[in-house]
Image (cartoon, rainbow, N blue to C red):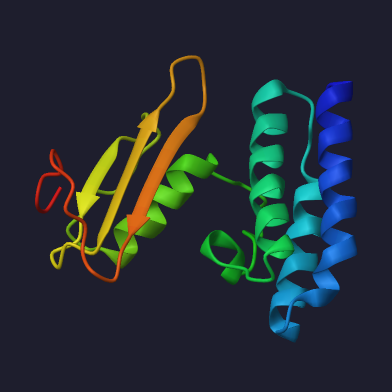
Length: 152
């Protein structure tokens, strides 16, 4: 792992360690430790694995700082340590929650969906050169945006 990636990963681990005690659920605290241990034990000998480790640890860092684990972190980490890229993982989690969404594969994730009641909208698009842009809007009164297609 490059020096910058190593520092970024270590800083995220330290931040998680400093804030994980504030997670209410003891199950969340255990899950947090399991994921940190697994991510720390993954090899970092190529750029792709470094990127994958840092994506997951940064998402966990955000969640721990907000005192709420969700997404991939509510389940134990994979025992074999094989992680799909984070965009694919999150896309598949959304597809599991919304059965009529297509499953994500190892191709670039592109998704656009408006809930049937009009109160939620989500869009995920690949950014040229790497990364994914995700946009989500939720409103108790419904969204009245022009250009949003009903049902996706």
